[in-house]
Image (cartoon, rainbow over all chains, first blue to last red; front, side, top):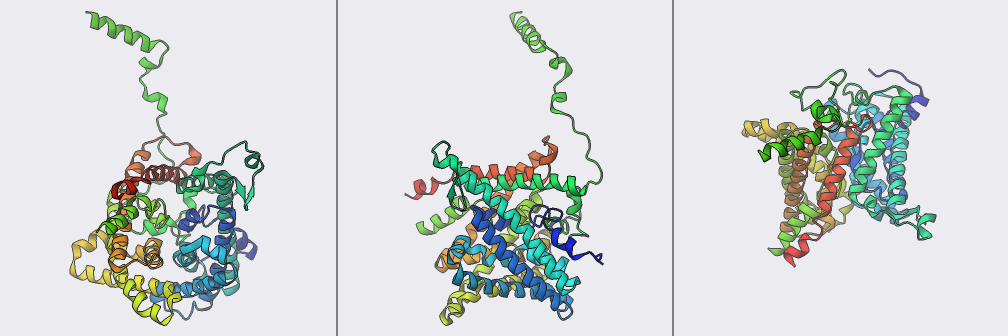
Length: 272
Length: 196
């Protein structure tokens, strides 16, 4: 059973410690696809947060009514209905954002964050705590998307919220288009994950592997994959020491002048 | 015929499901550690993708659209996909035990794989004819398989590489994915040159 924790902890854990995108690796698809600008990242994050909070509340309210065996289809139906409502609201009030996000609005339904939080939190906690958890996780997701979106917009298009950067408008530097393309998305995302894992180690003394722990974080990427790899070996403890690349070269060749001597010897043997 | 070939190749190479449309990235990162898993998952995805298209396409155009219930597509499609996966699992388990052994364990993962729902929605929004929609689903599945296979090879090489501590694990995997994605950008002009 989960430990009782304060509302403040549940609200802030999503920002670094259990960041859903960068540590738990949930919801990678929208994070890569729609983050070509800061505005899109913020919009996608806000939309997902709204669905996450509402679905957590509804599922938490219904947690004693839904039979355990059919809970996943029930959750998916609830989430899909919420997403449909959200899509209507966006079409009516923010048509531009709706067009920019495209099919990734309906795809919030299958975003692993929402089902993951429902499984991991909402079906075992009260309504208020579930709402707080949804909000905290949503804020963490939004922040991550916003940072990725800002970086890609600044580097790839030379603008920030459609305002041109000074060094671009002066005509000094050209934007690097690759960051606006899918390849740049993967690269920026990789760098963000590296930075967050580093921060996590410093602030919480937590190793990345621990956050992927299947018992404590149901719904994280490793859970879904681990479940089917019962045969796969899991290596515990410290990694075996690696041989540094320079040791791979035999000592006889690494001392100064060794190559020249060898060439000379080869040349002599050819002469003979 | 030419039209179908254009759809097929552009979905496999240019609009690759994983590397340029970013659908199914979770399974792409999670299941490419060994060739066996990549193979099982890709085959299961192709299978479910084709069956789900064959079911959702008529449902949308003959049931939902005529009565203006098109907005229910998300709810209906996800339920259809979930039921197709459940039925398929039961049927395969009873009728073809060896096949179940090979890909059965991947089937439940597919319900929440955004690749399937995404392709269904794209097929509807592009207003494809039924054969074209099937072709686009097949292409999407094959493209997914191609990306999975290529990336499995890359990751096997990376196992032996000496990676700096802070990039170890997921960050380096994502950087590798970025480079694989760059290589797919090279296909941009291929379709125009092939089919004029």
